[in-house]
Image 1 (cartoon, rainbow, N blue to C red):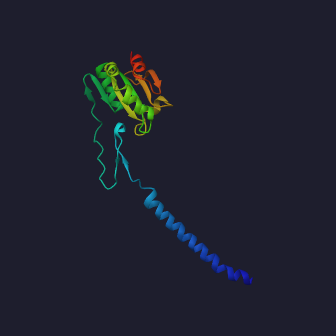
Image 2: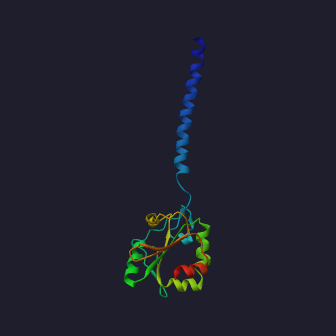
Image 3: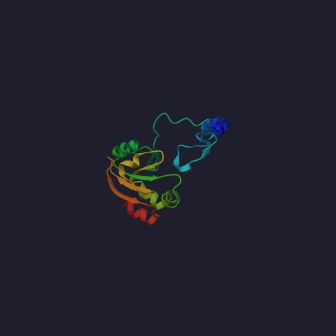
Length: 175
């Protein structure tokens, strides 16, 4: 009994210290860990980190407008791609990828920039999607990236290819 009376203040002191450390750890977690020190840009092809001390760019108030590159129509909105495909009587060439995907970047750098591929792509409305920011890919049950789909104006799959393909394979795929 005498030992219990002597030990009790130490036990209470340890519990008190444990409570204080728990509260401090929670405050540190809320102030450091949960706040990122960077923000990704909206464009998955040129993701850049912006410091938090700079105000973030305001998101566009409406869907991005398609770019007309020669006769190539390019958009980042699936809804817009379907409208444009219907209006122009073209199929949709959809490419799904993400920032950290090595083969997605290789596809863009080596295949999609090839002159013959660009020419073949003019038959399509080109829709590119970052799967980290756009959930369109979910409806197609894609299990690998990059994923290349040829879709009709209603979004139904006509052809698909999962993974990197070189310019020659892409030309054949687009025929």
